[in-house]
Every structure is written in C-alpha cells, then in structure tokens.
Image 1 (cartoon, rainbow, N blue to C red):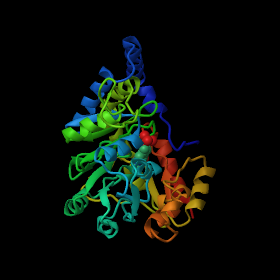
Image 2 (cartoon, rainbow, N blue to C red; image 1 turned 90 degrees about the vertical axis):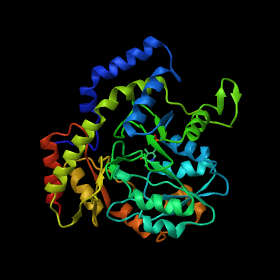
Image 3 (cartoon, protein in one colour; image 1 turned 60 degrees about the vertical axis):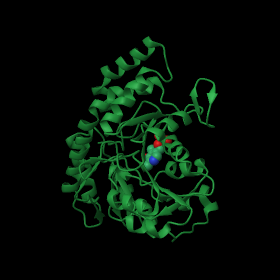
Image 4 (spheres, rainbow, N blue to C red; image 1 turned 120 degrees about the horizontal axis):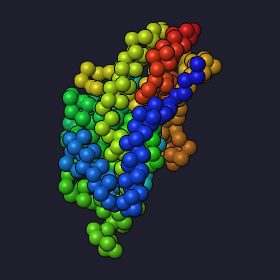
Length: 365
Ligand SMILES: *Cc1c(COP(=O)(O)O)cnc(C)c1O
C-alpha cells in the first residue's frame, strides 16, 4: 500500500461544492484585490481566533515581517527565535532589517525553552517570536512573563497551529500580534499563497494593513514605505469556504495522532510529548530516533512517505553563515534536526493506512 506523506484529495473531495461556489462567486463579482471576500474572511478568522482584528496579507513570511516593521523593529535590533523552525521565521527578521538570534528548544516539546530565552537577551533585543511548531502550543505563560520583564514584544508564529489551544485559550491571542500562513499544506490552507496577522491592537492592525498595501492610507497617498502583500479575493473566498471545517478536521488529526501515540511501541522511537495544558493540532507528527535515516529508508521502502522538519537548523544554514554560528552552538536544535522524522498524518487517512504506518514503525529494528 502506498501512503503519501500528505494529500489534500480527501479534504478537497469533501469540500468540492463549497470551493467551486467560492470560485464562482469571485468570478461573478469580477473583483480580485481588497474586496468583500477579504473583508468577510478577516472578520470570520478574527472571530475564530478570538481577536479584535485580522489583517489578510500575501503569505506567512509577510505576516511576520510586516508585524515586525509595524512595531518599528529593524536596523540594529535583535529578535529571538528558535533555530528549529522553517526558514521564514528567520527571514522575516532579516527582511525587517533586524538580526535573528537563535534560542534552544525543549527536546521533548520541540518548542522554545522559556528558561533559555533569557540567556540570549541583550540590550538590543526587541522581540521574541515563539513558533508553535508542529501544531504544539508553546509554553506561553513564562514566555510572556520574560517578555514583560524585559519590555519585549511577542509575535506568535502560528503558521503550523491554526486552532491549537494553551490552557483552554487559542494560540495567537497571547502575544502583541500573531502571524498565520495559509500555504496549502497548513491546517487551514488556501489553494495558493496567503497569510494573515491577528491582533487586539488597533494601531498595529491599521499599520500592518497600510504596510501591506504600499504604505497607503488612501489611494495614491503613501504614509509609509510599504510592500505589496494583500490577501487576494479568490484565496479569501476559498479560505472562507474551508474555515467552518477547520475544527472538525483538526479533531480528526488528533484522533489519528492518538492512534499513533497508543499504537507505536518501539523502544528505539521517542514519541511526541504533549504538556497537560495543551491541545495540539498535529500539523506534523514528529517522532525521534537515533537511527533516523535507517528508519526513514525502512518506511520509504514500504511505500510510506516521510519528511524531516527540519534537516538543518537555521543557525547552520548557508544563508546565515554571516551570523557566525558554528556546529555545537545549539546542541538541542541540532539533535532534533539529526533525529526527527515526520510520519504521514492528514485528513482522510484510512484506518488501514494508519495501521500500516504503526506496524511499519513497530517492525523497525
Ligand atoms: C509555513 C511557515 C511560515 C511561512 O509561511 P508562508 O506562507 O510559506 O510564507 C512561517 N513560519 C512557519 C513556522 C511555517 O511553517
């Protein structure tokens, strides 16, 4: 049996009519940028998250970068991020003009270890970007306490965690702002690139909206040197069609994850750890194994697709050689990149597929 690492087909088949209706509506309206679909989605997503504002932007990278720019973070400033993340978290800091400073994750949760954040705070530190990696909420209480103590802004990177909760409250509502990506593979995905920032801060929302629309407050009047980063009408309409199914589909991901957590019994495999007060949404089901590459080959040989998130931590990426990090500087992030293997987990996985993955992992010696 062939099991892909990910497929959208079962979800798309189920939502086929809603998606076609959304396409039709946009074509009938013949209006493509900054219109009523964008407005309707922003309102619905803000309500879903429990925030006052949602500003649609072009993608998740811009959601982070425009949030930093709107906070006047740039040249000469430092922003603390985890090293085990997708490159966009780091590049957003770079494109804002600031310097990314990497902090270590907790080996069990894969998320920023609050106690280690303080070690890398300097006079230049202006913000922390906690990433709710793999759909697991970060330990937000201590992170917010550290930020408060040092007067730092917090931008949550929610690109992998739409709908996850920490102590019963949705992620994206703890920091000053939160960035979402709606890249097709995310838990809430568009049929192309899209992103959003959510915040309770009126001024910040207005500024991010301006920055994403050429820095203008009204047509041909430019207050700020902005970017072109808007959520287009078609993607907004498609997201609006998919949003009502997000919780149900996340619930199904949790059910599949539960099957893995109870079914996988292999002494060489470390299963994901879920802190008591967290409800993850399993964007990625990441296991760890000291013989990761052999396990990967074993699964791939059986037709099971896998992935690694991420094979090289950001501080050792070629593009960040200028920052001067060396191997061994962030041993936990490096250990995760050496040992993490992501199993297939997607909406619509059949019982047989789930069991095949469990059996294949258990057979590995
Ligand atoms: C996907 C992702 C992003 C970037 O989103 P894009 O829409 O691809 O720009 C940022 N951070 C994390 C953690 C991501 O997984």
